[in-house]
Length: 235
Ligand SMILES: NC(=O)c1ccc[n+]([C@@H]2O[C@H](COP(=O)([O-])OP(=O)(O)OC[C@H]3O[C@@H](n4cnc5c(N)ncnc54)[C@H](OP(=O)(O)O)[C@@H]3O)[C@@H](O)[C@H]2O)c1
Image (cartoon, rainbow, N blue to C red; front, side, top):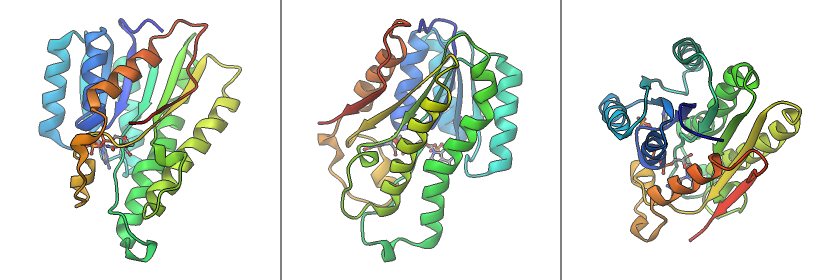
């Protein structure tokens, strides 16, 4: 898809991988609706995207675990941008590794809501407008943990396997529409995701988020007859 002037809804664009995806898409001239919670970081990415070439960029402070607010925000975005061409479901959180009975109940619920439930809900809210386009894309930034079982990540992995299952069924369900769907299944990336969960991981050895953002832009910008269904990015 030619990205110039296209409208992209991006979750988790205030930090990490999403922040770099936002900047790279802005350089391509895409319009951006960016969701996150941290207002300071949202405002920073909004102004940087405008400077980098996005013709229209708006940040929406929205806790995606709040289903009512998420639906309201989706409606607001549709009313402010009219046509949505691309949805990138990227927001996610990590829980410290360990056996299941050491994962606090509230964190268990928050992880499922953030990584899986809200992703399904936002996709549902935006499907009608995506279907109305000649070509549209839903890209789910999952994880290697959506493909490989790794010890100590029971809840995180359950959410990411869930995202992969959802992605695969959505592909089947939307195959007669103009929506193309893919998942990205990447291994460790050098962001603050682990530190935010109190986990001490030497992530400087991981993939750089700006390099992963290049992969995302490459996937989105293929010509109509080429579609990369699923991409695994590993160290
Ligand atoms: N980093 C890795 O090693 C790695 C590896 C594989 C897959 N992934 C996946 O890649 C995605 C991005 O991860 P990352 O490393 O970029 O993480 P990150 O740096 O911690 O960024 C996470 C983003 O998600 C947003 N977010 C989290 N909870 C939210 C909520 N309840 N409501 C709204 N926004 C919320 C954050 O916004 P605020 O800060 O503004 O709340 C932030 O913009 C996630 O789905 C993650 O599971 C990461």
